[in-house]
Image (cartoon, rainbow, N blue to C red):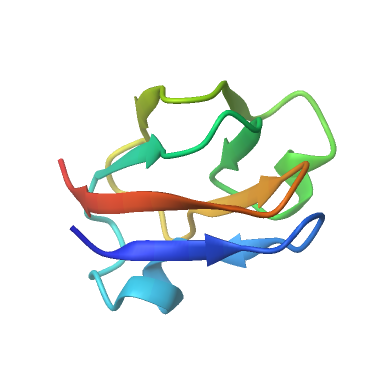
Length: 83
């Protein structure tokens, strides 16, 4: 399960970071008590198009999308696997 390190306020594209093929559905687990946003677009992180992952929660992104972005309100990390 690849860990992706997140720096406070820095958006990270999960397909690029993990090497998992775009379009593959991802399972994202927030490993710390900080809040993480997950979205199919970078712009979605600032708008209504995101999943809010509270501490120690897991979420799936949509199948067939070309991007999967996360951003954390504090330093943290997520585990990312193929769903």
